[in-house]
Length: 305
Ligand SMILES: [Zn+2]
Ligand SMILES: [Zn+2]
Image 1: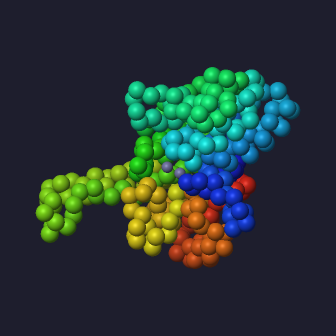
Image 2: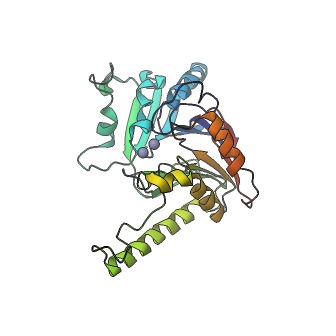
Image 3: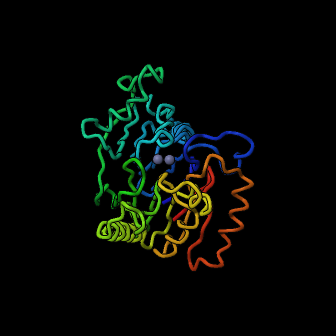
């Protein structure tokens, strides 16, 4: 399969000369299974607009367009491109949109449709010409047909967010964004009046178990696309609990799970190209990474696995 990065930025699109080389569009990744004419899109950030324009050229050649769109979660930077995805205005387009929902009284269709209302956009959801099926996704294993297997894993983010592991022909592409390491949620300082030794112990065990499950989820992936919004220093200083990972943690996690290639992804909107070049020199030289190749994802980059 060919993996193409259409958007690699987190939180908000960041156009401008400081971000032009790595790219300013928010997250969107395409998996193209060229031998079986299947296409999977992971997240609908602003990068989806560029993919849509590309697909329209293809549609002109073959007359129709089908794709499965997987949403890791519905934060704005992961769905903002959907209203600008040109194929949704074409009746020959058939889409399946999968995603997790947290409010049981609201369907995925309703959550996504929120931004397709006159208040925010000139076209309403019911006016879209494409045929779209909305499918709720939970943690589990799924057969997507054509021998494509999907495993999903809940990650650690303020909103329910799924990691996705696609397997096809013995090759594995795995995503983990947006997420941070699971932590003990209980007070661990015995001098704190709220400290409870049993709760602290149970919290520690629960975090360790969830991190172990994440490691299993990454195991032996050919490509892991992992949240790397912060440096370890930034994370430790003030960003714990914000739902994003330090780069150093992503590298360690990939190495421990024998991942072959790690794409550091969901770049902080404040991170310039020059800073990412500098971080590449510091973190991606391969000296301490065993067999794991590490790189910072760039918009437009393609990886064949
Ligand atoms: Zn995000
Ligand atoms: Zn998020």
